[in-house]
Image (tube, rainbow, N blue to C red; front, side, top):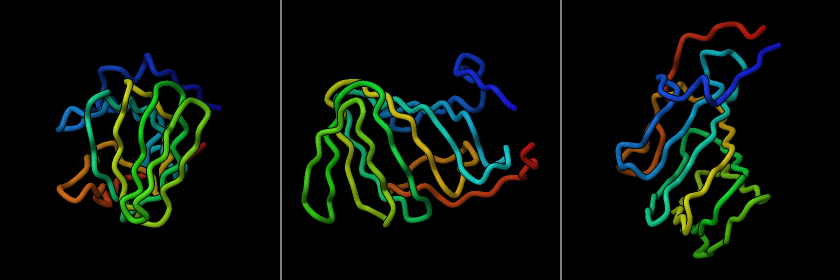
Length: 136
């Protein structure tokens, strides 16, 4: 059994801020942990906009706090995301996130993130690899 606390991640290399400053992600579980998926607590900041397209990953995103507009650029639809809402990005969905308030999410990625990812100019996380420690 493993127990992880956000307080133990803060200020480490698992505490990642986007180069754009639009979000901060505390990477709780990573590829190197050997589970095949990653788990992060991510805060997106009010007043920012981020274009994203996960060409290499699938992500499930559960809203814990705040309020955000999720724009599906492929379907030209907008969704209001509030606490208790889950959205799933599973088909290289071109989307834009527009936080109305600072918003906190629990994010689960597969394949697992290494912890070094940041969105490129197309909003894509590169597919990085890491040495995997066998899960216990």
